[in-house]
Amino acid sequence: MRNVADLPLHGGHVPQWLAQRMRKLTQLVLRLAVEEYGTRGLLERLSDPVWFQAFNNVIGMDWDSSGSTTVTAGMIKDALWREELGVKAAGGKGKRSRATPEELKAISKLYDLDPEPYIRTSRLVAKVDTVALQTGYQLYHHVFFLDEEGNWAVIQQGMNERERMARRFHWFDAETFILDPHKAIAGLQREFALNTVTKEAKEYQKTLLDVVQERPEKIEWELESLKAIARGYRSLVYYKPREPWERDVIKRYESLGRLELNKKALEFAKEMSVNNYEEFLLLKGLGPSTLRALSLVLELVYDVHPSWKDPVTHPPDPFKFTYAVGGKDRVPFPIDKPAYDELISFLEELVSKHPQEKALVRNVTKITKNWKFPEWEKRAT
Figure (cartoon, rainbow, N blue to C red):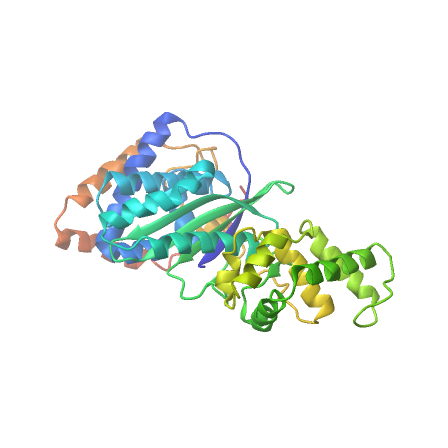
């Protein structure tokens, strides 16, 4: 995983006059990015939430809107299919996300790749962000980018309906999905998160794989005993003296959702002798409530713990993002149509230029690379 960003849920839609300009500008920026950095370089930048957010602002979306993810990713996907740049995208919002496997097959056929590893990766990153790392967000958006060399990136977003917030997850060519897969995380840090994909949880993962080889009925009995303790009952038989803090641990788990085991998933794990945490996460029927229940048993019965640290490292900062033509919701200022059209015209001319002429533009970007927004001009939006 690359990064994560928290965004408030916003309503509204993109007007047609703006959508048409967004499509043109998106296509131009993607062409220039691939020419400059190659397809892998483009994917790496899409996996950086600050770069992605800046891209979002350049085309006229708002910096703090949950819709920025779905609209911008959708514009990028559309542009990549309209033009052959050596990279395509699959999936999308809601029902479109469920079409990801079939679309990955089409992309793989186009680039002469085996689709199965990418379909597995698509399923696994979704399982990690809903099951293995739990912060109260339910995924509803998943876009998978794949280039002709087999490099990939994923942008997916989850929603917390109670808090009306969304969190965005970025992935890029992850070597491991179960040990600190994040390079950095940008978002609002929560007080705690059930995190089972960190180096701190290696012993947890190992013990969990051992425990699921037990009879599901035994695990269920242990869970029900712990839930009874949380309700104030004192069991006649227990593994060790119960402390008051243990009720707080149970309440912490319950704050994330229900504690219920899917016995069929546990039966699958036992029958298949699952000994790899990635394969365990991919088990049919394994959802957030089952992993929460198993984690509680591990903590209070086996004294083996996951991490409770939310792996956020970078809080969102609107002044890191680029405002070129204004914002759809008139923040920080209304869309400047003449400036937007002039920008498109300039980039269209730039795309057609000789490579040596483009080098002049690169030199300008080097000069402005370390420019910082003046502190005295910062205003809350």
